[in-house]
Image: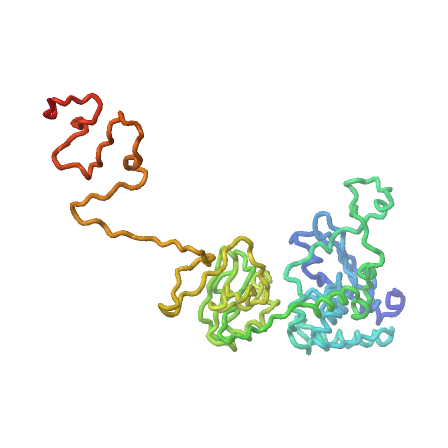
Length: 424
């Protein structure tokens, strides 16, 4: 075997010795200062069975220790992390990446063919600069719409959590909070994600995580182009507080001339209006569900025209949503009459009555004639039946001028003397 320390000098020359592993950001952890142990020729690679240098470290607090699983040659052939075997660029399984890029890289599995294939790939890696993938992956297109939609924008550190404590599941764990394992209920054993194999993930076959992601990609929403050709505005949502006008312009100017960019900071969104409809359609197609600025995935939608905002017809909005009528509100007013003959005073849909009320509006009286007091403010309009009762004085408007100047001179006032007014 390749791990033999005997007289097979050729195999010992092919053993791998490295100074630092090839890791993704999730496996490396969020702490830039970590302690990492290095064991030269510590284990054999789980793919090519050659001894390689094993690195072991803890990615963070309350996380499990992780170590490299495959050699760097196998990692460079597939451009994957040495620990989780996920793609270094998209963070996706190999099966999903090869499906999105239409790559079918069949690595041999027999011992002899595998060793010959590995030697050829090492020669190709030595002749390259080491920054680009080799083999069929290096000849594949650089990007894919499906991969950009499924790719993670931030590291998923939840993947570094400890395993579930089997003693706690049986109720026999006596460590309590000092237990380095998780005290949680295990997942369903029938769940396909509970059965993962590192070799199946590397070869891109029978990977349950890849199957789940491919099903999600087939059911992802699409952005339909509006029928109104006058709409050239795109809605960008989820901006956050750090995205600026220049960053949006630097991304969208490649699709065509931009007329205006309006950022609504309170709603954390922006409206980008293009000069032509073709530029807006290209920007929507290239940016929908794959626009990432400052590590944030932004939402891209089509804007609405000014005439269509809030437009409703028969209780149905422009988007096809039926609106129920609100109870208690009055009905719609009738339209104004077309001609004077069709004019009607029934503007509030009142039912007709047999004796319509007619309101007579009197003209103001001519100068010198006093107006009668309003109802309720003048003297009583009835006559008393008592013959001894004094007669009621005439209204002020009916009295001769100059007779009474002040209320105290009124002869009908109680306590007044007749001598003051020329009486006997």
